[in-house]
Length: 295
Image (cartoon, rainbow, N blue to C red; front, side):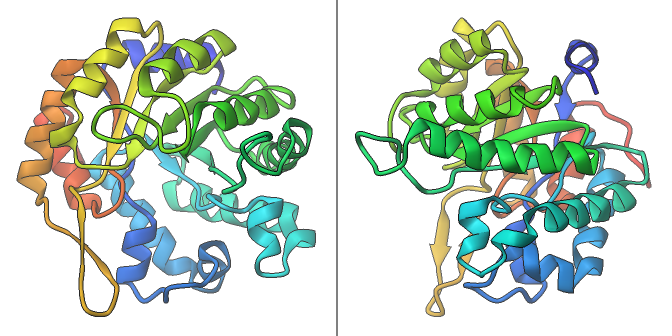
């Protein structure tokens, strides 16, 4: 997908993303504390069933499960030397699952390391971490890139720089923000739009964080300065932790869809769900925006 093709897709109407991956894998038996990427490779059918359901529900872009498959994330499990192979296999699983009926996004995220001087990683070191994974994802054949659940504007700038150093594919950038629009470790939703769109991001917005019912003002503020489509991919409300430390999300499909339509009215045009959502949420959302879905 070229940047022009993404823009054509966005200009044609609402672009529908997928819903959560991690929370659904945990519901399917993935234990806490393991590498999601490695667990997926051991249980590929679980991931592919979920992604096929998203496509059937109406998702036009499905995220490959490559979220933390970077050098820093894989080092925690001793798999740094397997980075290219793992990213290739994970993307192949998603491409097989969607069967050409949706675009496959190379999913990248924060390393958890803060840039100097606030943290202990330099721009060059972080750039090389992101560039290495971006190159592996391009070689694996992704259609588009997603930088999601980013913690601050600065690290998102580095990721965008790194991806653009290896390819011309469109990059969708979304940060996790508080209900007032502040990013968790620096910058704001409005600053993210202003900065990243000038650097060439194809779309900018938010994901994870709180529920859609708390983000109307944030999305509206982003839309006022946006020259690119605004992304909204929030959680199904705030999680409630049970006695076993497992998160439960209390916003049902109807409430989620109604709140998401308000975000569309506020200016969001690339939408989906994050933690706590599943294909039923995406299906209802597709129906509410007038999209024909498979039965």
